[in-house]
Amino acid sequence: MMKAAKDQQLEVNPNPLEVHADTVKFDVSVNLPVKMLKPGLVYGVDLKYLYDDKEARFERVEVKGDDFPSSDTQEPRVVEDFQFPYTEGMGNGVLVMQGVGIDPNKNKETDPQPEPALEIARGLITTSKLVQTPSYSAMVSYDYKDGDIDGWTPEEELEPTNVNFYFSQGSSVLRSSERNGERGKFFQAFIAEKNVTRTVSITGTHSPEGAERINSSLAQDRADVIEDWYRRMMQRYDYKGAADSINFILKPVVEDWTEFKMALEDYDGIDQSQKSEILNVVNGSGSFEEKEDALHKLSSYKAIFRDIYPDLRTAQTEILTVIEKRSDAEISVLAKQIADGELPADTLSYGELAYAAYLTPSLSEKAAIYEATVGTYDNWAAHNNLGAVYLAMAAAGEGSGNLEKAVTQFEISNNKKSNPYATGNMGVAELQTGNTSKAYDDINSAVGMSLPSKDVQGFNGVKGAIEIKKAAYDDAVRSLSSSTNEPDNLFNKALAQVLSGDNQNALSTLDELEDADSDYAMGQYLAAVASARQGNEDDAVTHLTSAVSSDSSLKEKALTDLEFRNISGSEAFQNALK
Image (tube, rainbow, N blue to C red; front, side):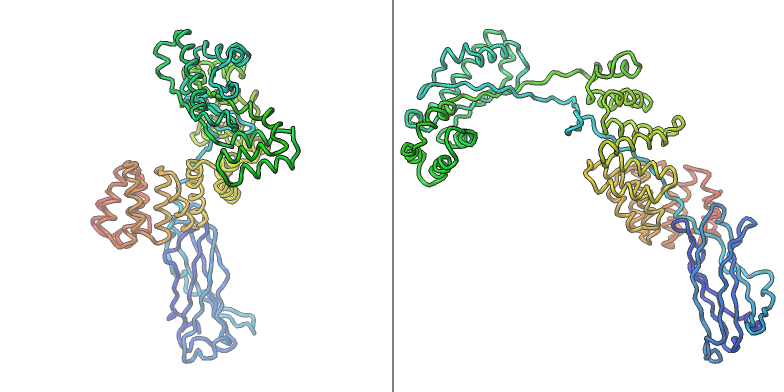
């Protein structure tokens, strides 16, 4: 049996071996010659992967004669799957085999043959390990607002001021009691302050009864009266050219029941059944005049005429003025003094401090501002943003212990309020510490929550890198297609396409990378790999030449990279690596 074993055929798939997701998986098919196997005997195949004076052993493949009763006429064939964990230094190893004859009944086996062991596969393709690990820090924007966070924006914001003036029945004359009363004095004082004003909207209205509705211009006249008074006061207080920049909007509301129904809802002078009677009339058919005449016949009419109608004879005035704000320079100076401990943090609002941190490009200055911020404005956004700065500092190699400090801040942020910013950032931090599984869960959770699109794209870049590490290449392409067009993300997308067998689209993605960063050497190197996988030697050599021109260290890598095994003997390939 062992003499016949010299004619056996062993096939390894894939060959060369490949690493994916930190694991090398392969199968070995053992094809034995006809008449080799004998009843009661077993042929065993022992496999080892040898590298750097080390070895990885595998469970013996046993081909039992009793399992192949037709072995005298048909070739016995067995296929077994294997895997082993990948570690650095395995790339140049070899997979070897030796066969043994086994007599189970006598508990006896032959010496391993051949000696030395037979090489059946050489080396590992480690292209999947080219994945770049990007870092991303999601910061809550300085203008974010919710029940807990009072954001701030440098953009112009308008503040409404509302004053209603009331008129006598059927009249558009503004009474002295209105001019000189509390509302009138407030109105005049407000105009006297010369607030920067964008619009003045005046809505003139009338009550439903005949004395009001028969004058079709009454609502317009009431609005005109307030506009005229406003303009005369601007002249008094010397507005000069500022008056021309104010946009007056007059909106007369004629024969409209909206204000009446809103007032009726809040009115408690009649019972609910009487309100229902009124609404049946107002919401029913007929003209405005017919509905008002029908209301006259209701027992509740005197009450609504006395208590509701007078408040409908108005000129409702809304003034939109510009909110005064500090300049960028003023905010930056004050924030620095706060960070240096020279001023209390509440000198600026939370939003202003967050904006100051946004303005400075220095990570250390951002950190100092947020360290001062969290002491006074102890909210989830401030803690997340401080952690995001620490995370960015850790990724940039600035200082020590920043990764641990970042994790602490993300935990505080999520404890105060579960939020996608801190959750996704925690995932990025977990990835930096090597906890890939936890990182993926956190980031996947974050992108499924409510986040600005830029942060979803940022986290998708990290998510795609993790999916490459998990050998989920199709998922990685989807994630990276929805990420920012950063060079690392484009490279990883192309890598995932290569690893999934889509070399042509990978080359298109690498063209995008070339446009974004022409000095990205690994992009050219990966383009050489994709071209070699397509059997296009000329393009592979061209890309490889560009790669080693940008990064000479890639010469040594290319010389041992089994991706180029089919072209490594060519003169063009050798010249590219000189």
